[in-house]
Image (tube, rainbow, N blue to C red; front, side, top):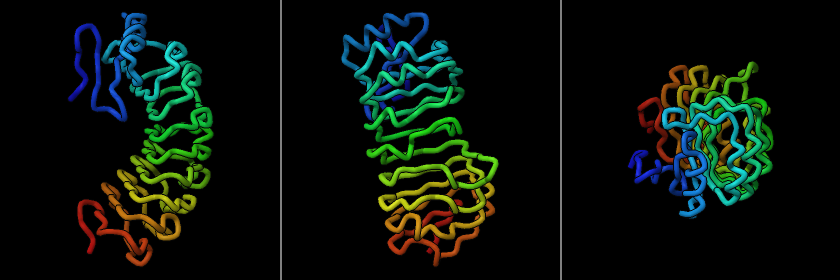
Length: 230
């Protein structure tokens, strides 16, 4: 079910881990009151749905919220996020200041538009799902990315490294997806990075050449650029 208006408010029931209410700038206080009254644990916002705030300070009034999803935003401050100690699902895109993820020890899922000013991601003990968008460091390497060993699912969309060199050991990783990584030449070393990998999906990585001997032993049939390898 897409975003729809139910009575006075916008709601999104199929996003993430819980139902969410849309925060609209023209009725900000009414939206906050509805989140409180309904006991909702998720909020979202987008300029196309009347979210025009430059900060997330209003989140200080909703300390029980577990899910945030704000997109196409241009934020001057994200300090309000630090009032959410029970945050489990995070997505705030695209323009925003750097964020210290270490403040959110209960995070389980992060959709991350890479911001080099962010820190603390590797310290998250419960993070199992991470989707990284637009990872394009000048070094064109995964070195220094900093990922927690708890990850079970990892996705990269629009990343610029040539190889997987620099990724840490991810002993719990079961699914890896690589999309639009147009510089990627090989998957060498994957067996050492993710020895327990079971699923591999690669799309639009047209320079990639796959050496089957470099893939984890327990991997199912991988899908590479629309073709299932056998």
